[in-house]
Length: 576
Image (cartoon, rainbow, N blue to C red; front, top):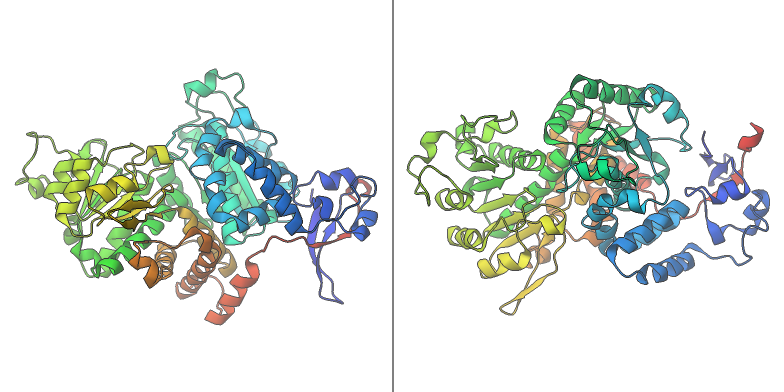
């Protein structure tokens, strides 16, 4: 049941919340709790007299107090726990603190710290957040959704926990990812927290550590599979459509096979996208676009090696193929420029078990017949980098150290400004470090990484690596799709997002080696991407027919700023 509604006074035009809870119930609601910021008038009207100390603190004073406590915490996981506890007490204050300290706190609420938190979630959980849908309660999906206290739901971030970052199957402990993504949608994209819902489809786990852990809080059975799994997800989607027909669904951290299946099954049926496939691909493409500006080159002049052809790798390779097509290359010419490497090695058209999304990038045996190999009949990654004369090397394998000194040195021999993108998360899973690239390429390499790395001093120069973080793309994609009222998210919207993101890297930043903007500018980045997405939706014949300046105004209006709204009492729930 709703605890409040958004209202506008017809006489004065004032925006306020009509609140249906009182006293301790109000203080226990993180979306409504203002703690010491409740005014004297609100305290009397909402039965708070005697429940609060008399002093009144504005939000900036509360934030100062919270930052002081945050800085006392001894390590990142304790900082994560503190911030989640603040989120569970007072969402407005949490988002004010996060929005004003994005560079420092995004790595705490999301990668890399969220990975550690997910591995321990059953042990550190203080309060449940979001919705857990299980085989036992899926039949009551309408009742579950209707029980929500949120005034409306515009965004759902959903996972089944099977492939959390580079950490694998974490079952319902993977809920930390949807919660973290919602944090970023609000802090970076500006969606109102009362419109965002994290969801875990808890269909079991095949992680033996979790199944043996007496403290594990999830569905402690082997994972549901096959037709039963498909029917379960279908029930979930139909429940969303019935209860929140205008909501966007973001699929998050599903296994490779399920991710591609769900994307294809639902992309034209409901407003939805997969961030691991499309968001990663769009962010990496933006970094590559910027690198082309720095090199004063084009995509068709490069040779790409993509290592790890799961969701992220396939998404990145597909985006590169789109740019090569835009530059006029045929499919055969594109195939000769993109080399896909996965667990079996270099992918060939006759590789057993080749998946549909991998086929466009598989080589013929004839294409490599004259390659000189380190070992007969075995093509290693160094062989590919050397013989293909790779100028761009992308890693999404979760295999730390995969990009060896020898491979990086070969990249430096192949090109004056090689592009190295070790994108695996968290930091411990990165294929190489910024420092390793700097040393192996004598400071000439252009770098973007999945997790943050500090700048490196090399030969008197400061070498930077941009964080190729999906946070640069998905909040703007979601915001743009929602404000445009588009019925679906198209590939052209993601391409528009990539172009807009790359254009936001200034000439000075490019000169310093940045391939993406800085995280502190994420609000502006999300706004510009949302505008580009909404404009592209209009050009695709989807959504609202607004002029560019109208879209700009709508996006600006839609971006919520963390502040305390005025409350007025509505009918109390107990009397309804």
